[in-house]
Length: 375
Image 1 (cartoon, helix red, strand yellow):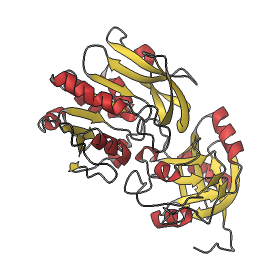
Image 2 (cartoon, one colour; image 1 turned 90 degrees about the vertical axis):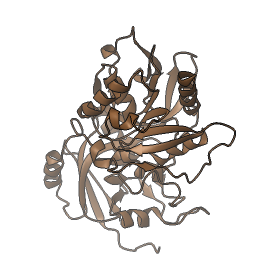
Image 3 (cartoon, helix red, strand yellow; image 1 turned 45 degrees about the vertical axis):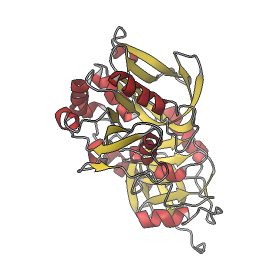
Image 4 (tube, helix red, strand yellow; image 1 turned 60 degrees about the horizontal axis):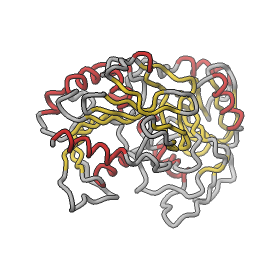
């Protein structure tokens, strides 16, 4: 796609009135959402298509974005869920044999706005100091006062059940694109709750000999157990976990009846099902370089993370629930398990995409938990 000689001004204004001027790429127009930053150096396509970013505008701290383009194989879902993409510099000429579209072309096709040319370092430092906040981005309205009012009028992330908006309506059997079922082991059936599930999580299950049947967020315990799965998976997803008490109630009914594994939002739901509470982090964890300590082994895993809420450790009954992993940056809870029942969860993403694979052992552990429970 030829580089346009005309650069369209764009303006981002946060709810506290701080404004950032830049230039538009992708779709033109106007949007609002919670502004968060991500520290990953690569994986912008997976980030954009991760349903966990529904309702959010993503700032990339790495300065040059778009240099390897976009392809249809690396998407985590069927579309872009981020409200907008905020970067320092756009690489308008992608260079990769896998590239099928430029990043700007891709965002245009998805109707998603982007802004480049602003000081993402200053924006990130502001969000770290003041906390994640709502923002408004526009190419049509360049009045900071007007955009601030639009940001303030947009819904806050806390209290929102966004999982119901991104979840499916009808169950389906996942068809892998990357992995094949191993022929040297028995295939296990997994019922996977979709709160905004990533494709690479499902691919990793296939690689471990588990076939996922994906079910809607509103599926009851009775409906799910009627499928006779070998295990239950609670997926990642966007928004506040507290409004998902209807899911936590169903998970509580299944505890002890079937092995359960949760990731990200699924981890927070597991915490609620265990009788705990959650709270909102100041600016969340979004990136591919978060150090997490495994409390059982003392080993440190570098993890991929994307969440704005966390399980409150003081709300858990430690006689029944064990904290298995701790974030070394801020000491927040990164993993929990029931001491007697086959149920465990982690806050981070063991499938990465993007990110390191230090935590990929958790998928084999899910299989081992199932086999031990059956044995």
